[in-house]
Length: 222
Image (cartoon, rainbow, N blue to C red; front, side):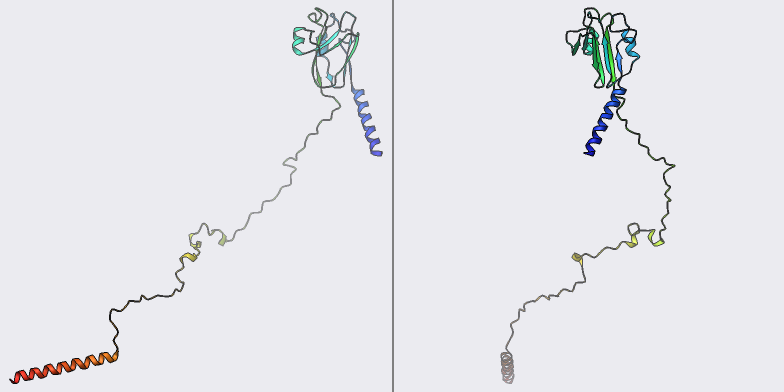
């Protein structure tokens, strides 16, 4: 309840402030009016129109007020009105910023100067954004720069000195791995002989030589 009451009071205060600051602009000024005898353009150039203000048109029955577009304002064309008033005391609230155009729809009156163009500005009660204040360099605390002390060993990085570059041994190219040595087996072309067979062959050869020598001696004796 307290929050709702505060909100309602703040809203009412804002409305009252806006109403108090709103201005009622009597078209043509206190010494003129909405007629062919008043210099309406000179009057409008001396005014400042804001959102929340009111335009008050006061005129006799032979006049009226018609709000039109910029093109119809320039050509004094009243056949396509945005708004039209003919009560003799017309109040037009300025509810939004932007340009608005008014003419008198009676024949020939617009060409005689009964036309009004205004530029409504934003409400004076609208809050303006506060400028962002950034600290100046003089206000910023100075941060001392401490030089780094490098040891002589760190002046030359391993990437810059060739003597520090060592290649890591690759397991694919290791030569110190002990691998078994395989000697090729060459098949022998000689047949292995039994020792008893070799001894018999030797005795046969010796007997053959003895027989041959005996025949030789017999041949010599004859």
